[in-house]
Length: 238
Image 1 (spheres, helix red, strand yellow):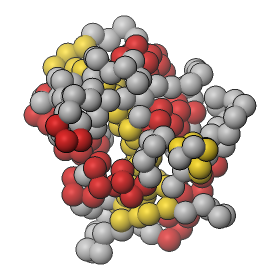
Image 2 (cartoon, helix red, strand yellow; image 1 turned 90 degrees about the vertical axis):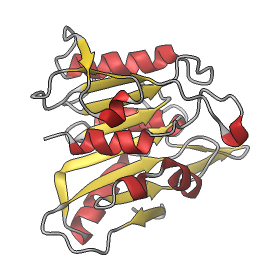
Image 3 (cartoon, helix red, strand yellow; image 1 turned 180 degrees about the vertical axis):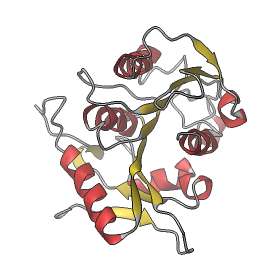
Image 4 (cartoon, one colour; image 1 turned 120 degrees about the horizontal axis):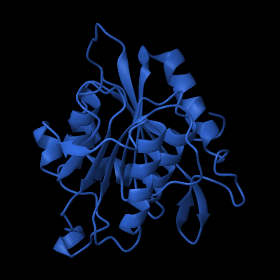
């Protein structure tokens, strides 16, 4: 990974099977450790190896996962994702067919971009309040997309574009939306494109949690129950 740094949680318990690898991306104005605390993934995915990369500074106290002028299909930190998969794959027993990406806000947009353009390496994506750049996507990737309809920082139309991009690449453009049988997803008002026998479903969740820090109204928030829903979605994929 060169001079790039990550935080990681590697379970210490013995495992008879290769472990899932989850790469989780923070947003524009928080860092990896802050995201690790509020994502809640360590508790929700106790058997997975979870990696929290640190984005590079982008000026004025912000971070970025790409460089100015990057083409949508060649963002700078795609190379970081490849390096994480390769390095953790060589150091630990991971299931290379169960590599997942997660993100919130700018990190969600980057997770969506990774899943879209590195789809041959990514089993599934779970994103909260993100968009996606460019297209068409490469390969098929299961997708869980959470968005609040009143989000003003990343309008819901951006989430709809993500939903439709993955529906198109997963051959689900004509599939109707149906209920999900997983309670953790139903709690976030999720609808599923593709039946239980579909390997690469798209799940679209117009959640209604707008509770931000200190109880203020903040529809761009990471909703309560998101980690549990993500864990259920990943676990339900064959």
